[in-house]
Image (cartoon, rainbow, N blue to C red):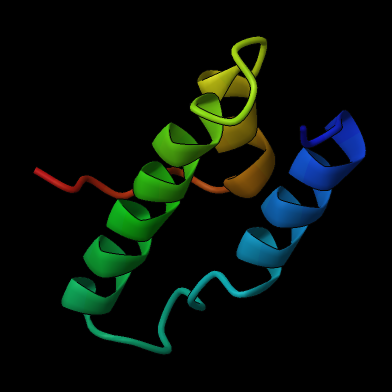
Length: 69
């Protein structure tokens, strides 16, 4: 089972690889957000105590999440 530290490492790596504000097209940002959500939902299957919203906040720290609708 993954520990809190493992979840923090995943969130940190996803945050570090977040596209820059002007570096990519809007589709790239949309794809990134879809990937973040997909990873987040997969993690709940690993540990039932996992908090998806907390994970999303850790990944998007200091950023406005872009819409994926």
